[in-house]
Length: 214
Image (cartoon, rainbow, N blue to C red; front, side, top):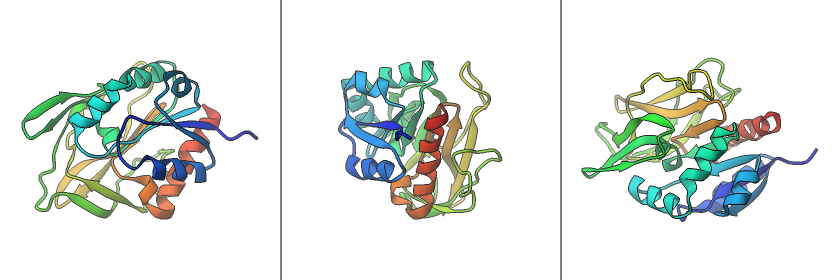
């Protein structure tokens, strides 16, 4: 059987090679590119992201990445966002008083965590919902987080692509935030599966396996 094709979107954000290697190990054929046609044709699109929300959105818009994401999702084509690559899928990001518009795939605002110690850096458990394909077999595992900002409230919403999203939560210092979302063809994690050992590898395999059925 031919391996599913995945594009890791190259828009100048972060250590992209580690994401490429991790998805390859999960069983996909992976290409790192910013090319629109290649990104549209792939079975899956992975959107990474580290650093500031505004900088990631600027890099994404420079390659028309927000259009690639929207066009894929309008056709039911799978997309996976990681870390800031998840955050930019929301409506807004607010950092240092600056409000930046995101991709608006989900309602909500990315804001600074209100925990006693920020950044949230290290291993943490998550509260995965029942029926999650993303966390199948790894519901009780720990994942690796590195972030100071997150989505701390969620408005229940449905859209014309899917049923209600499955939202996974985590807690850092008494501050709850969205750790992952599974919304039809659009999956995303605040943590880094490529840095999360066996649990992260299993999550990526779950995603790659879902591409075969998409």
